[in-house]
Image 1: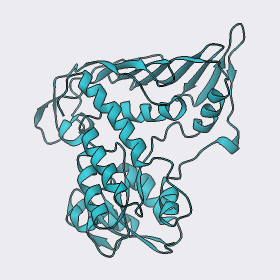
Image 2: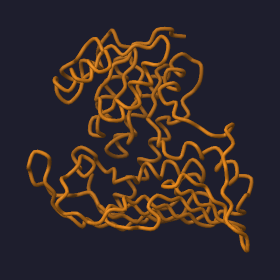
Image 3: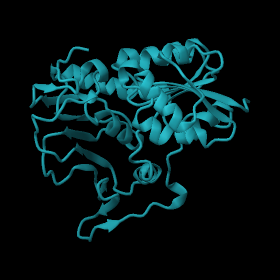
Image 4: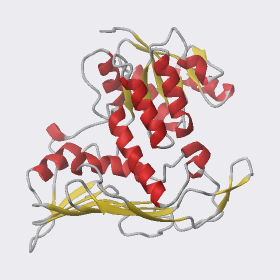
Length: 339
């Protein structure tokens, strides 16, 4: 058991500043010792804001720092595999931001490296938006609340109309995001917690805006779809359909999970934070999750608890991260997208 845990930060983007840094610094015996961001200047701003003693000029300095016990990797996906492999090789525990990697091959390499070092904790930041409902949904589906699960619809839509003038983001840049496409992996990871994984994958996608301009004024070709439909069969035999879109303006179901059973339907509307049960000839019933089953964000607490031997990583271990990256890879393969 380790009492004092010294953490280094590689990449201090929005989620790291909003969640990981405050979460880590709130835990007794944990100190954030060094940060490396995309530039020295941005790293210094983060260090000042969070009272971090040192700023590194390159991420490898953090991964190999002998004064560090654990590394939090908060970069875009392009650096997840290299930084994870380097940190594990240097004897560090690793908490890596989602999505796990650029593609399934990188994710497999990360998993194999972590298995070679079983005494080091390796965790992926989990899909967060369904945490309050996950345990409740899983239990009720297993107990037959809606009978046999027949089909699932998942909608991950921005609700925006097509906007050719919008600047390019890192999520649309294959060099930074890899095969990850919009919110596909985030929603699929959540769904798989309740239903298990996909047995088959078919996909159709569109790139409705073929070129966008970066923040630096450079026009780049878009290679990641902005409208995507994925469908197939789950391991339990139910069919599924996932739609991710940035161009379906005024969509009536922007962020929904709809699970159709033989005796009822469950709809989790994330926009309204409402879970509704629909049965034949009955009015819809809003279901309230008991506090005992309601999960909350505790990623940093779980990571440190696993390092201290107090618990195991549940959300999300590397083997589960590989599964959603294999799904992402299968979708890209269906679309004939080269890695």
